[in-house]
Image (cartoon, rainbow, N blue to C red; front, side):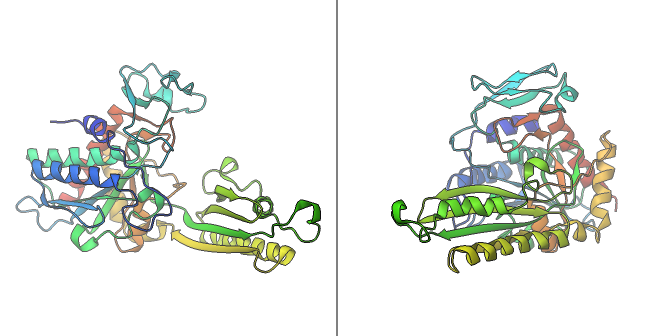
Length: 407
């Protein structure tokens, strides 16, 4: 029977980077390749009701064992896409067996995994790591989650473990905030679910940011600089001024835990026109609302200073903190914590400094905390995954299925 990491090594051969500012779903046609390959694999292992819809969502189901039809149907979700790194193609990787817990050079890139930057590394000594060659992301976010879910499914279909119904869905475009938007919950068919999209095995995350996107369109007045006094409005300089008006210590570099932030993700422009895109994050709903109001106040200041049409701000809410939903469904956390302890770990629940498909799904009526995959340092060339932690993640998923089969 295939281990989860073996599946991962196969899946990272698919380039599935999603694309910002693309209206269609999936945002990149390459996500179809993995979606169709997964559906074929699911059919081959004997899953039921396997299909890929018009937006590359992959669905499948394992019926309940006879006599267990009364048990709650539990679902597992992971996403197809990866972040865009500027480098496209299959992810080059290296497998390190018997890792010594120290520094690891990432190919010939000049980059290096070091314990001073990644303090968890010594705890992985003696295990097997999969690392990048330093040129792009590995793709374990979230192909590790996909691999673990399908390894669980193969075990359920090949073994004699009794279980309730199990539903699976693999979503496109999670990295750009669209992953749960078009998921068909009726087709999915679960009453509780888990995204498998976190870091260390043994994590169960239920508290996410409240999230919004802020887009600035800045219109300048371009004239010859020799006669610009009192007339010129340099749109690029105004964009820099907008950033300077935001609290300088409330940026990702200076925040942790439940501290929110403003994050400038892109800035482009010249004298005539500029654009700037931010994400706004906070765990606390009231503080989140204040952050959005701060953005609006900056827009008022800029337009009073340079003219009413200078800066146009568009704020778009993306997702909410799912903690308020999970609080109303205690069994979903009880099952996860029981399974983690059964696998020999103590559950860890840290506030997520980000979001998952589960945040949107929870507010659509499907309580959906997030589980660890054994992957680390996502969204960059330092991404790596531990093979033994992937095995542990599969064991935890099986423990969750067992928990619901006894209730």
